[in-house]
Image (cartoon, rainbow, N blue to C red; front, side, top):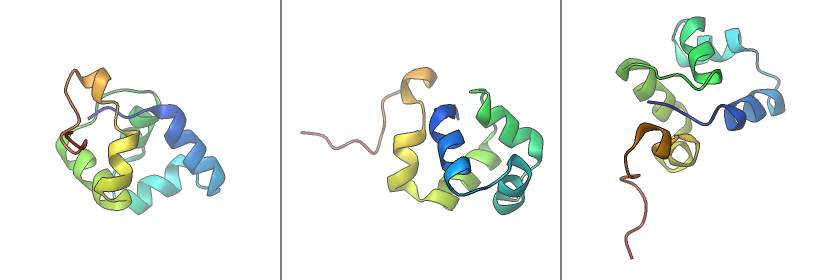
Length: 78
């Protein structure tokens, strides 16, 4: 999974969370949060914990679907 790092940085700053504290809350290594903040891909475990932390409804807006080359499966179909 790849996310939009600017949105995560804004969330962390707005909630006064360091990368270390956020990693603790997600229960992942700091290196995984650093990958998220750098726009790098993370593994399944981190992706699942990230989505669980924010919930699917909010996570879908932070995930970089275009960057992963896939369509958002949660997007409303008209």
